[in-house]
Amino acid sequence: MDDANMDDASLRDVGLQEPTFGQRLRAAMDGYGPLCAGIDPHRALVESWGLRYDVDGLAAFTDTCVEAFAGHVGVVKPQSAFFEVFGSAGVAVLEGAVRALREAGTLVILDAKRGDIGSTMAAYAEASLGKDAVAPADAVTLSPYLGFESLRPALDLAAQTGRGVFVLGLTSNPEGRTVQHARLRDVSVAESMVAGAAAENAGARERGQLGSVGLVVGATVGSAVQELGLDLAGAAAPLLAPGVGAQGGTSEDLRRVFGDALPNVLPSSSREVLSAGPDVGGLRDRAVRTSESLAALLR
Ligand SMILES: O=c1ccn([C@@H]2O[C@H](COP(=O)(O)O)[C@@H](O)[C@H]2O)c(=O)[nH]1
Image (tube, protein in one colour):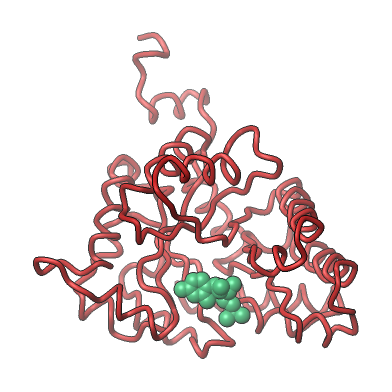
């Protein structure tokens, strides 16, 4: 059988194919624990670190986060909005952080919640996941409210480049339910997102692996997963769970929300972890301890 006739799994078996995002994420979670540490330079946080809220302060804040997290936690999620506030200079700081973290082997999820009609989506996808992107991330968050299929260019590009996406499913904010719990012919919006991710991850699921099309499901959604009958474990999707810490979500909430899908959960925390700065050691310690205790609780 020549390479052209070998399927993806066979190619990986003989070491001819790069690991997928789902495989890299699983290895990172196994090695460092499940925490995804957020980099969210809120004005109040930057100032509480004794920095000015300007581009230099943003750069100093971000450098400290990179030094604390790179090589010490498995996954980091910079929130694009806080860098975009400062225009192109802020975006340059974000790009530098993405590069530095990835060079250290730390996975980066860019939280930018991209979503648009397919032709524009293709450009968004190139910008964050393309092989020629200025500073490509390992994965990007996507907003599917132009329809799951509008995300196709990003889904396809991520698959081609060994990267991943996280599609909003049940967001951590209370307003999310007005859209995400809505039903069309008995199927909730959230359920159709789970079905979309499950279909994309079918190959990985058959191989018993984590897929590369993830879902965002907040730690704060209470009993919504059960009420809506979502089969999160069956989707083989990495489950990015924001809302831990500052938004009130706890480890116990994670257990209740996710049930049998817990092994696929990547709890994300920004402000609570960042409040341990500006000392690099203190910040690193908070992140590492949080990840260890999450690993113990979710096991
Ligand atoms: O449903 C969602 C989706 C994304 N987020 C983002 O996660 C962090 C949460 O920050 P905390 O300081 O830990 O509350 C932030 O970047 C949000 O934009 C979310 O909270 N909920």
